[in-house]
Length: 73
Image 1 (cartoon, rainbow, N blue to C red):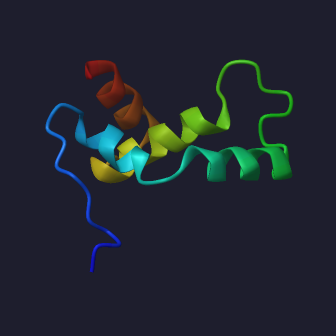
Image 2: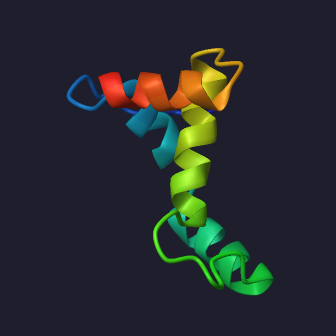
């Protein structure tokens, strides 16, 4: 019953709360295993994860929708 119980945190944006549900070490281990950041200098895998999560939550259909929405935030 208490497995998914979380404290209500009104001081943090909703996107940040959802991203906190995915442990960062799991992403880092997958990034290291598949070498997805190899050759990247600016746009890392975690940045793409954040952008695509934002797009899913806001029902964005194109990359320009995502970039416009993130630019407004």
